[in-house]
Length: 390
Ligand code: FPP
Ligand code: MG
Ligand code: MG
Image (cartoon, protein in one colour):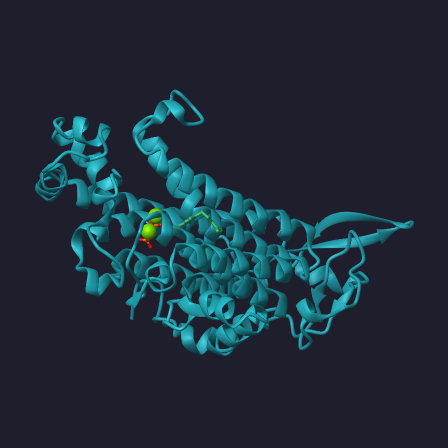
């Protein structure tokens, strides 16, 4: 028994909704060209953690009993109002047969209206087919960014596999990533939800912005704001490359469920803080675990010239780190010196503590939702993010 009640068996809760994820993605990826097929599907053969789809489904469940926004037809036009779920029966609601797949349906979606699930018993929670599809789309966007990232980082392993760039070469890895992204975009368009399309398209832009900020690492004067400190720049970069995807897909999941704006904001805040914690822990693990445990090269960030949270905190204790950070650890012995100073400093502990603060904010957000097993699972997920070893 943990604080916040007994440990939720996430597998039991959403396992059925997750079990076809990989298969469905494979179906979205079929290409007439066998090699393109192989490259774009390559990273899916390893057992990913599917943490993003998991979060999206849990948000779907946890928000399913929260207040819904409803479009009510008023004199030929639609007006958007927020209403508690108990009053939904009073309105005409366009229904979606929850057992049919919204994302493969060819029926046109009326502009300015949203599909709500066919109402079942009020105390019942549910995941929509469109939310399952969103999980698949997000896993595809994420994986496409990894294909590109491994080219940029010249990584030789990923998920304990030889990296795609190493296996197929940079050109095919890039094109495989592009293809994945294109197919994800088609699936996104087929959700026929403008708000969700806009959210997820912004995510793709943010991923590139985050990666670009990292490319210009330390060169803050070229960043968006001249007044940003190095640490603020690092946090913004972390939002762009990691937390944007999680936060905006949490919001999108709530949007697909027809949740009110307030509930969508809660989903967003949960995802944003969980995502930031996730990246902080990732940057900590780069110093503390071996490559085998990590499934990707450990100790890679310094070698890539990157100053992440542990180094930036250590810099406060050891000012001599400043010049190494500025020159991106590019002189002989820089990486080793920085490595030793980070381990000697409080940097790793401070990084963990900051991750913890973001987890607490995530919990505070999600706690505003009605009680449910999914909500408890989302809370317990924050502990898993803090304690993860890979
Ligand atoms: C992993 O970071 C990389 C990302 C989270 C995003 C990468 C984004 C791009 C390459 C921009 C292009 C985007 C698309 C959608 C095609 P990391 O290198 O710190 O983590 P790692 O240790 O897992 O490699
Ligand atoms: Mg990388
Ligand atoms: Mg990278």
